[in-house]
Length: 457
Image (cartoon, rainbow, N blue to C red; front, side):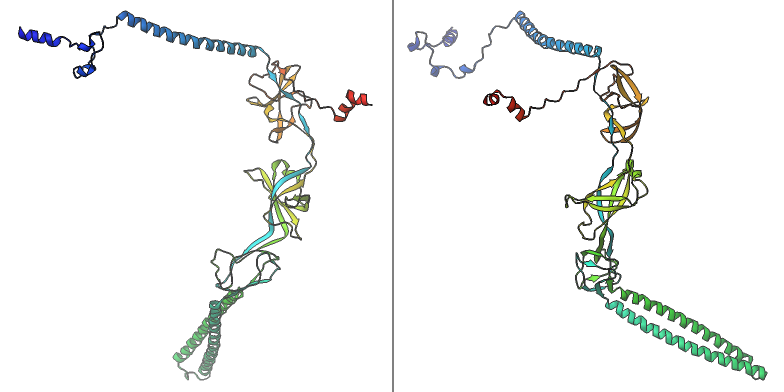
């Protein structure tokens, strides 16, 4: 009994005397951890309320879907109506009459300017550059001495080969004397054997014959050594002659790569000098296949450079390559231009003008008007609002336009924008070309027509 009463007293809330009027109890007297307790006796939601909430959410999503679908269906219907109207309507096409192009009289081609002759001079002997007589931009003549090379090794080898040649000549003289003596001795023994048989032993006679043969062989060997020595001397004389470096032709020095004292050799990859002949220049122009047969060798040609505005240089068509470049379908022509005053530099880039032979006027149409299919190359022509397809034969291709050799008349209205719907007998509507803007009235005429001017008069 006492324990149950004690528990009942502990369960009863403690009421602060100062808050008997219903005020909130003092938190300082609340038991520790009471503020973190989670109530567990909350009422559970009913199943009907959950179903209603889910249904409302589904209806909301359905409304959004319907709001987005209706405009889309409207646009699809409009597109179908537009497509149906366009399929029922006649195609609208743009037409143009074939152009009559006047024959080309001059052909303008970018060109590359090169010297008439161009060579690099390498040393032909090993030595030290003793002296150079010309420098860059100097003009030289043919066979002019432009440098001297000191070749002490070649000089020494030449002296040695000359001494060896003298020795070989002396050996030849000695061999001749030995041969002469051997022959005389053999003749003497032979005559003695004939006049006094038995006076000369047969073995001695054979020995003298062998001695004469050996002397002849020694002479032949000495002569061969002399020839070899003479060839060696000539070789070193040629190498010594390369000490003097000469210009192969008249021209201008465009490069000098060595200074005095430099070691030069035939194995060097860098040339001593570079000389270009620029009194006449070669200009190379690549002529398209279309005009390759309209140019003749010997005819005049002209050259213009940006460095000389208004000046035109005159030259000649010298020669052609004789065969077209397979990759570019062009024929290379060489044009020769005199350049006595040196106004043109080799390596410049210019524009060559070549007159071409008169040709007949050509008919051209836009390349966009061509129709390619299994029936061949054709073009659509409008006659009385009806399309007719004509088979074409074309010639030169000018890029945006193409030459028509047969199949069209000059008065034909050619469709410039054919499409997949165009076919033989299709009725079309020709698009009206935009009218050009009206030209403004001249200022003087406007002033004369103003009322104020008339009143003043």
